[in-house]
Amino acid sequence: QVHLVESGGGLVQAGGSLRLSCAASGSIFSDNSMAWYRQAPGKPREFVALITSSGNTNYADSVKGRFTITRDDARNTMYLQMNSLKPEDTAVYYCNRYPIIIYYFPWGQGTQVTVSS
Image (tube, rainbow, N blue to C red; front, side):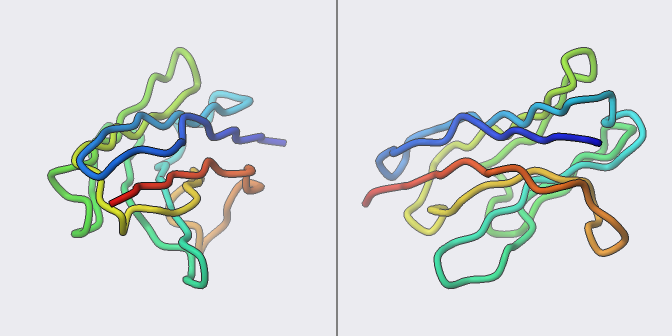
């Protein structure tokens, strides 16, 4: 069974940066498109960014130009570099395959990102 562990979150002021990591228990990235999702309090989980098995990327309009998704297949790790953070980026961030409507790996615990104004 695949295990996903997110890390790297924290408290940062608006305009700051964070780098999130998603470590997988197996070599799943070469066979799956993967994505970052986030869930703010009282809101549904939403798509943030994806990276395909061939390395193509796509972003939600709200983060385009500020966030960058990458992955390191040798380390079974995916990253999300977040720059120019805004208070509305505050959420718990999760990683999983894309799209999750077909099937998804067990959700990790997520990593909290809090952006203060």
